[in-house]
Image (tube, rainbow, N blue to C red):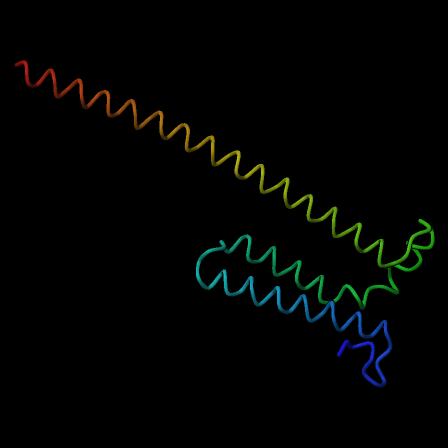
Length: 129
């Protein structure tokens, strides 16, 4: 049964509780990934901070209401736009990190190939002597 239909819970309160429950579940998933060492400490903290924002986002609607009125959008739309911008920023940051790692892998591969070549040439020279 949806929270909005539970006696004594307004639709707005039901939405806040639902958002908080989703945030808590996501935080638990992030915690499990961190415990299994699938997620580094740096990213664990970032994702848990986002979960915290998500858990309390419903409570922040009155704070966003004047801004939303000024922009002529609903507070929920303003929060959604903020969430999309935040997640886009995270995607860009992760793309930058991946690009740096790809560059490091390429450099290390080239260095390993040079070392193999040197060892192979030294082995041939040692065999000729």
